[in-house]
Amino acid sequence: MELDRIDRKILATLMADAATPLARLADQVGLSQTPCWKRVRKLQDAGIIRGRVALVDPERLGLGLTVFAEVSAPEQSADWQARFAAVIADIPEVMEAHQLAGSHDYALRIVVRDMGGFERIRSRITEAIPVRGLSASFALKRIKSETVLPIDTRSA
Image 1 (cartoon, one colour):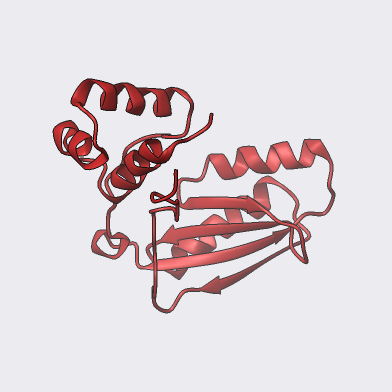
Image 2: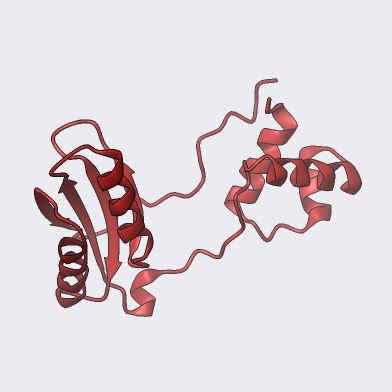
């Protein structure tokens, strides 16, 4: 789907605040409400807008430990990759999982209450599927965390 400047402005506005009322959104992008709503629906139908969420502070919920884990696979078969993806999909504390090119095969961002919580996740992964290695780094302090993607809203 080709995105024009108005589509990108809609996305930028909704990424900054998904609760923006339609009337304000339409005004900010220079459309009336009906055409604006149709564009939002089109962006949703195309899968560009995947959902609308509330951003919650994990520390205020007692989830004070963010772990970046790197997993090395013992093999590169499609079967192992599918099994690994299924294991990871079933662990809600794994917030992100990325397949990598480089010295490790996967990177995971895991959010837990404490080291015991991470150990339970590590055990769950390594007991469910064989891995060649799993190393972890623990975040000491969040310096920057963004959810708004850097899209161009100025050019046509």
